[in-house]
Length: 163
View (cartoon, rainbow, N blue to C red):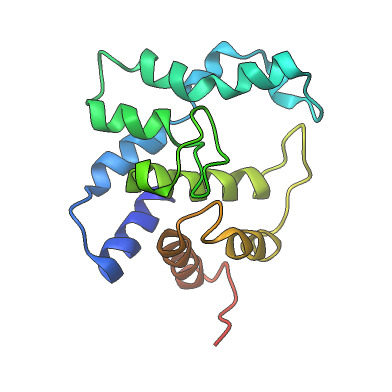
């Protein structure tokens, strides 16, 4: 999904981002969760210490891949939970400090989290999840990335065309 968003973004807005790099970062983005117990990953309500543990997974993933991935790809892994408005984690970076690859992975990751049944949520349909992405566009998500994501879903007939 991240590779598709990247292609759509570049098609519409240009840029020198490599789809291969986004795809690699997306494949490894949650590898830091290997250090978190399955019980914690499935819980609906986390304690403060469990939430702290979850918030460490981006940095742990970047550290774990230090010997096998390029620094720019590891940076995308480390920042994939950051948000446009600075409310993400682990560092609370805002749009100016975020790389495009991390912004793309963030949208794809959140959509998957919304549409997959997990221990802490009930899966939504794509048509239920898309309005949440749109609502958070420009806040949590880069507006142009969210737009590319919606175009991708429309091409795959997973989102309704509002025109």
